[in-house]
Amino acid sequence: MARRFYIKTFGCQMNEYDSARMADVLHKSLGWTAAASAPQADVLLMNTCSVREKAQEKVFSLLGEWRLLKQLRPELIIGVGGCVASQEGDAILQRAPFVDLVFGPQTVHRLPDMIGQLARRAHVVDVSFPEIEKFDRLPEPRAAGARAFVSVMEGCSKYCSYCVVPYTRGDEVSRPFESVLAEVRALACQGVAEVTLLGQNVNAFAGTMADGAVVDLATLIHHVAAVQGVERVRFTTSHPLHFSDSLIEAYASVPALANHLHLPVQSGSDRVLALMKRGYTAAQYRARIRALRAVRPDIAISTDIIVGFPGESERDFEATLQLVADVGFDQSFSFLFSARPGTPAAALPDEVPHEIKQSRLARLQAQLDAQTLSISRSMVGSRQRVLVERAAKRGGAELAGRTENNRWVNFAGPSALMNRFAAVTVTEALPHSLRGRLEAA
Ligand code: SAM
Ligand code: SF4
Image 1 (cartoon, rainbow, N blue to C red):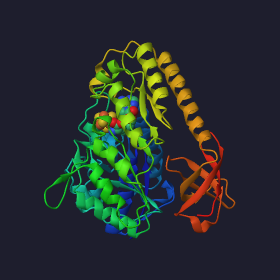
Image 2 (cartoon, rainbow, N blue to C red):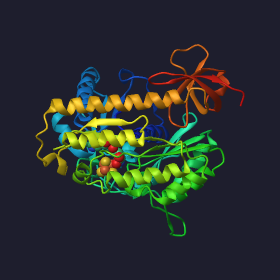
Image 3 (cartoon, rainbow, N blue to C red):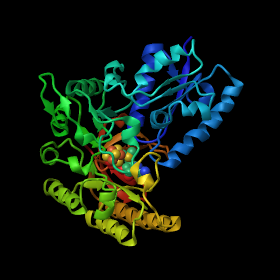
């Protein structure tokens, strides 16, 4: 009997990508379809994040809700995947014995088989890292709209001192070059015009070609941009150490490469950067940005910053504020340090009171918000190329799409523009979006 599944996704774009693949595999292998909400589904799957403690707590609070559904319908299957599953493994079953499946980020393709095994076993746990097998076993992706994520590498080998990712997702493994391009071509044939190449450390991509040569992310970008139908290319998330000259050259020579870069800096203090094991100084980061702006003077640059790393002094924090102002970051993310079990930073002495960390975070966020708004205001009057993604939330004949620098623009226009590029003049800057006027293309 065809069953219905519901997938709840927490965390990063890699998880969003994996959830979409989970849906593909359940649909293709078992003929199951998506349910609109958890109570309507026969199978409940959670794709989890453990990068900060808060994200991990959400998992167990949602599991509490799902447990009540299972009390009403004991045949309900509950599965936990992603980074919490990878980190906790069997321990999830001790805390939540009503869970049937535990699977890691690298075993999503085995879901149908794991569900089959439940006929013989009470629980199935598979959080192994079978290298890149996942991509060979997944069905061809189904596009949903004109934007798509394409994962080009899995895992991370950087081992920043605060981060769980290398432990939950394993070391870096790149997909073969042709496998990535085949996925991009398949998506473009289904109408995808904007492709985001994904990886935890995406610019460490080292893809093997059919002749055995190994190529970098810049070469991949050239090929992806040349695929018929692809008009905009993005990539995330990059590490400053791998932000190579070849990538800067790609920004100079590939117009389809969006005028936006997300390049996490984490801190502006060299002392903290060294404790974080990031491998670069603030001056080296600034130098990369200068080189990039030499070829793309108006590029928007966003970042991730951790506030309250163990032992962060007021002076360290001020160095971060200074870097944020100097680079002129746009639309960035900032987080309070969260000690993750098993990471070296969790064992560092930390005498900074929580209230001080919170007030630093508030100061940083106020500065970042002000910079975002000032860049938005500077866009008023400019003509933007917008990829229309949906009807605007306020309804009517309004459409919503994204600019190259990743801002939402709401404007009046015909629904025939859905999933297409439109020329829009920005008329107003609001704190979280822009308003615009449709122009003749
Ligand atoms: N690979 C990317 C990189 O190196 O920037 C991002 C991966 S991580 C999932 C996303 C962001 O979460 C990081 O850039 C960092 O700012 C933040 N993060 C990771 N571990 C953290 C921790 N223990 N506490 C607070 N923030 C953390
Ligand atoms: Fe985590 Fe550092 Fe790898 Fe990013 S580069 S995923 S922060 S270990």
